[in-house]
Amino acid sequence: MLFVGLPCHIQAIRKIQSFYQYNLKEDSTDSVAFQSLSWFKDIDITIGLFCKENIEYKYLKKLIEEVREINCLTKMTIENNSIELFFGDERIDLEIYELRKLVHEGCRICSDFSSNFSDISVGSMGSPTGWSTLITRSEKGSSFVLEAIRRGYIEVSEVDKKQLDRIRKMDIKKRESAIKEMNKHLEGLPIFYNNFSDIKKKEIYELTVNQNCYVLDFFVISRNICIKCGACASICPTQAFEFEGELPRIKGECHKKICGACFIICPKANLAFGCDEIQLITKFYTNSDAKKIYSARSTMQEILKNSQDGGVVTSLIKFGLETRKIKKALVTSMDQNEKWKPKSCILRTTKKLTETSKSKYSLSSPFLPFLQKSFK
Image (cartoon, rainbow, N blue to C red):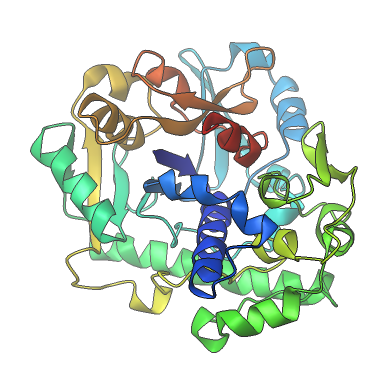
C-alpha cells in the first residue's frame, strides 16, 4: 500500500510502525495494544508533502466566501506571501497575513516542513512553476521513483542549489518556531523535540508508559493541538476513543494495566519517537544512493492540467497502481457535500485519480481508523 499525507501524518505512521517493532524485539507480543497493529506492516511506501501550516476548514471556507462562493473555486495555491484563488480563468490574491490567525494550533508546534520521515517527499518550493521538488529518503523510495522515471511516468531535472538552500532554511525555521511555541504554550507536557539520538526508545517508554488517555485528552485534545489523525483510536486496545465530528472523545475505559500506547504514538504528545530513519536537516545534502533531490513533473498532459504543480504525486500513484507495485493508495479527496473539505479515500484503480489532485490546505478527516478498517 502507498500512503500520501502531511508530515504529521507520516510521523503518526512511523511511530505506530516503530511501536510495533519495539514490542516485537522486546518480546511484548502479548500486549493487547500490539495485537491490533500487524496491519500497519502493509504500508509499504509513504509520500510526504511539504507543509508550512494548515488552516481549519471552517475558517478557510469563510475567508474564501467573503470573495466568492466556494463551490466556484477551481484551484488555490499559497505562493509568494499570498493565497491565490482561481475561479476558472479569474485569479484573486489575498495577503498571507490574513491567514496567520487561522492556522491550526497543532501546526504551530510542528517541526517538520519537508516531511523528513517519508520515503518520498514532494513539494513546490525549490522548483520552477509547473514543476515539483522531489526528494527520495529511503532505498525503497528511491527504487520506486527511479522505476517511475524509467517507465516514463515522470521527468526530472537538477535542482538549483540556491533553491535547495530555501528548503533547508525553511526546515530550520519551522523547527525553531515549533520549539518556541512548545516552550511557550505546552509547559508540563512530556514532549520530546531534540534529536532522536539523544533519547533512547526504552527511556521514552519508561517516561510515557504511565500516561493514559485522560492525560492525552488534557494535554493534546482539549488544547486543540490534535491533528485528527486518529492514531489514538486505531491503537487503543479497549476502544476508549470515539470520534465526535472529527475529534476523538473518551467514551470508554483505559486498559486496566495502563498501556500508554495512545500517548506514545500521538504525533503531538511525543514528537520525536519512532523516527530512527529520519534524515536530519543538518545532513540535507547527501550523496547516498537513497537520498536524491530532483525537480520533477508528470509526462501526462491530462495530469498536468488538473494538478497543483507538477502532478508528481498523481503520476507516482498512477505508476504504482498500473504496474501493480502497490495494490491500493490512501489519498485525500474532497468531501462530496462540502467542496474543498479534505476527506480520506482509498484508490484501487486509476479511475478517480484526478479527483484527488490539488492541495486542500486543511487537515483531512481521521484517516487511521479509516485505513485500519480497509485492512479488515
